[in-house]
Length: 539
Image 1 (cartoon, helix red, strand yellow):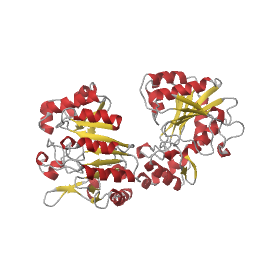
Image 2: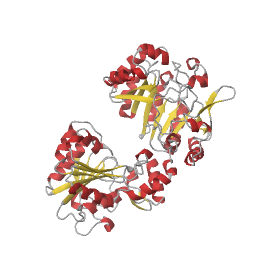
Image 3: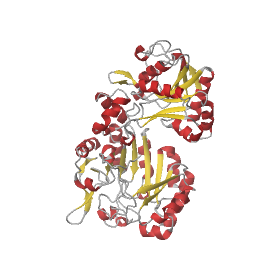
Image 4: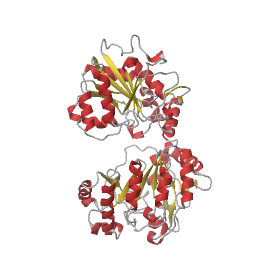
């Protein structure tokens, strides 16, 4: 780690600084340390926000209201850039951070401030970080001599977290035993490893807003739009967001976050619980592939629309059948903020191909291998032939790409009795096992649901708010799940919003706004009324 020490803050706005040296009110001689996590900060954290200072400057100002500027530490990553007019005293720079290195830096910083009793910790990309809440949490933390204090139920970016300096070395040692990224959830993830060993205090939001999956942060183009729109709605602090967000569900939709792309027309199986055979006939007899140039066009449009994206191959069809699959992977990974999910049956892969792709893509390529069953007879009933090949593929890939291979089973009445053995067996091989709810595609398929997981109160569809799907010919349906049966018995999508190759992704995304608004109004077009996928959430 390269440590860099700079001069003191020279132009911190005084509006949030309290009288004296920046310590919280009513704390007497208690000394507070503040740490700003800028390890993942990028250009969005330093852009002007809401006709004022950027997010980093706002967070810095807040931290100087709870601690002396001498006691504020900035942990900077490769995307950090020093704002004009602000000269920093305590900065540790590194090209690579983990919670282990982050907490080690915190321990070193605190060691020179032995009379400090608390560490206030926040992220540089949080323009709504609430100073009043920080003061309340700090008072709560000291009143009960807690070791970790946080707020729960708010969207990310409204609350600081607080550690006691006496617990800091122990928490750092705990981090050293676990490989945890230095991201937004990193501190809690470390403590969670031995949570019963710490005295913890929490402030709960009067309304639990976590289900909205809303992130008004300055870290991506999408979240930046969310943050600006939230500000325009009058939100300035945690109390405001609790009041405003439940009444402004339109704020939840701005730019897509998840993109399915169909790259192959055919499958190597005809699964009994899949609607694709109803759309195409026997998919084992279907061919056709998306040309690399066409796929590149989609990626270029997607990058222009939203700088970060999860791309999922293949919407329908088996990706192993595409003759130029590695080239498609390269086109995704050429976009630094794109990540890739490959959904496969585990059949049809040329020897070593998946392993090479996994090695080249690293953590940016995740795999889902659909198996559904723990024994061959049940597998054959659900999926057909190929059990031995699929199981062998899943095991080999899990060994080649540990932590990046998800073994999946759809939970149905037909396999419920064997799911526990499926989970336990594959958990020994891969740490990631997915048990997915059954999707009847709005009643198109016979219901095989084992349990009703729908919320008591319906809210607008998450897929309409954040997902897009592109078919082999470029068609963009309103939603992956939105299938209907025509008068002639054929099955197809209820609505095509546009075409990626004729009109473009951006126009198709805009066309989906009316479907989402209908959900806000309590009206559910087409098959939406019968669909129970609205509450599910993709990566």
